[in-house]
Image (cartoon, rainbow, N blue to C red; front, side, top):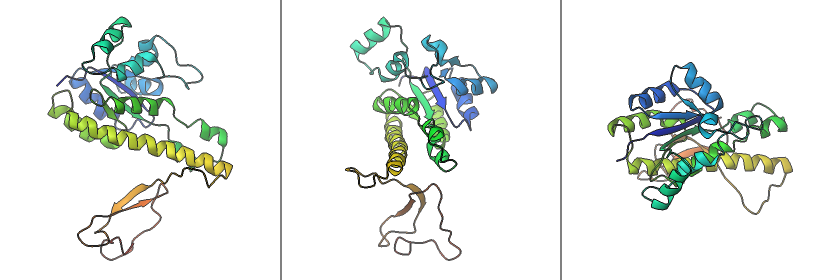
Length: 248
């Protein structure tokens, strides 16, 4: 399996970055990072290439355009063992990007904190979901990490395969990535629908956060979980054994 050589990191939530950076350094993986992520990586004492330096193009429009650049997206989307892609990458002097670590602007969190339309709109992430979708599409080549919840498992996988990841793992991460982008877009779509009071649209989006696994489903041999349409679970169980689907 081909080793990971280049990683792109662009994260809004910068928690647990050190765990990732320690292991990327261990396998001499070059890091490309943007804006606040670049500053945080430097602050933690690790090497990184600033994205604007890598693309030779500055961040513009107050940071609205950072990662939307052909050198970045071609690096992610170039296909494995495709001679035409390889020729074009060489022609434009682009490098493959094998690992994408991204999490999005906290749109859902901001919704719970303010009613300011202007502030809310600025929390719609454009570049992040674009990177994640591109990486997930090209999962044969690219490992995509779309949540900090995946960090520890990624590190385990990276060490297991000595600086790379298995195709099976990449494919599963691509599924999780598309779920992540779909959920994010659904939150935004539902916000706009609520703003216009257009509740009976041609297409409806139902989303939920997993609260917990239940004891069993409608029958003891069935599995079940409970989901909530809000960020937090507002139901607290005071006593008794774990609930089943029928009890809930």
